[in-house]
Image (cartoon, rainbow, N blue to C red; front, side, top):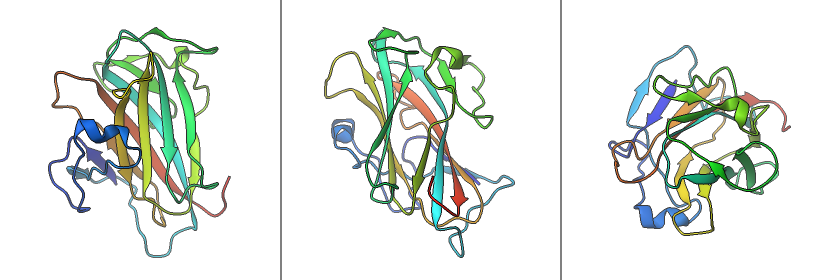
Length: 200
């Protein structure tokens, strides 16, 4: 099942999107899916594997906040194995510092990452030779994307949480919380959760 999260209309998990000023509070924003479209995979919490593999498939910067940036993604949550936040630098490629960041740039890390129409595949220019993969034994798990050209309260451009309960099949989540906001950054993130018998 693919669950699409485009800005908090509909709330089957009983959660509401946070205001932009609250996005600086890590783990506070919980946004529920608006649309669920069927696919060949389905999720179940009945008798799943004890661990969850969380794979970052893609990040699309449909609209950026600054003209030069570093982009980081952080995964956090009480169920992570080990239970510590993990940060991954997506952009720019190699070294340190900031680089020009254009709108519609797509960083595709797995075959499930598709670089949607209208975006530009710049995967070869990012740091991601392999997909960022994380392990969890429960949830909720929070994904945080940051644009940084200097530390500031508006650096958090995407902060969403999703369940990481026991699975028997893979499930994919697509987050794009600011698709209707034309005055700020607009990022899209896709992650895939898969059952795993062991941590990794």
